Length: 394
Image (cartoon, rainbow, N blue to C red):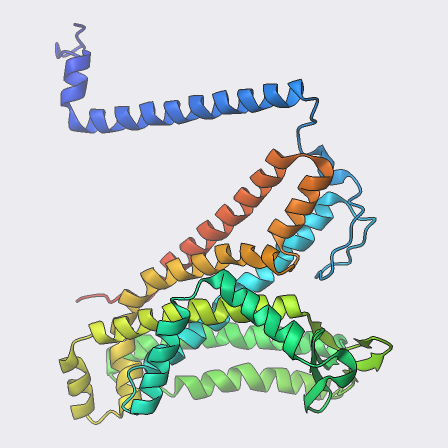
């Protein structure tokens, strides 16, 4: 037994009896154990690779990839490096995750509110949709939508033309896009400025309502902020209306914007599948608000839509956000199923790189790091939003 300056014992028994010291001691021991375990595993893997004469490290990222990627957001070619190939796959994954989560949240909210509608037909249809799609594996749904697009839609020369200059065929969807110019750049800047102004306006009107109780036509003013500045920038810039229209050339369309069957099937499957879970979350969140809150809002003269928007949803959000965050994470991770239908996401490109280089560990580490980063960033953003929208009691 050793003693400190005050004469108190500092032996192991006294350290263990102190709750605070014991807690931190256990955490330090666990951390040391994890570090030692990972060090042992890394050494074993390194020795195994050396015995098999397999190169290790991330130097392969600078080598020429020598394979094509069917759909990219960058100027990628077979002469590009493996690093550029993985970047192209990463951007494809980000596109599907961001667009999918945005649409799944909106679609889930619409279906969830519809399932509580007084219209019996709409409510029943919403329940049938939720109960059906939630109980069919996502992979089967992806196969279904991909087969529907590639097998049942007409060939490229007989493409459907539901809207002028918009075509739908086995090769995907083709529609016109504005020819990008400086005017469109200024319009985009004006849109961003209007969006920032709408955020500050939302905070101001919320504080104003809390202090005065008066409602502010936020949605109308916000819509004006988002639409008027870009429109003015477009008009001042000469109001260019040139469109890059898709035209059938040989065996495919040239020009415009093309959405491949793989992208359409993956996006549709992820949005409809995750949207069914989001719909249940929204429905449960709304029903968690006591019935008296709704009745009080209606008795004060608010319409049902106003009661839902101003009274019910602000209270339901604190119940909706946590499980909704889990579904957003699930959609991002489920996007890795794109490899089953041939969409060149990060996992698909990493598998090809792995087969060509033989550096499986490095490719898997990249995939794990990317999806872990996506999950942590999504969780951080949703936790921040949950903190901003929480109900503060006086």
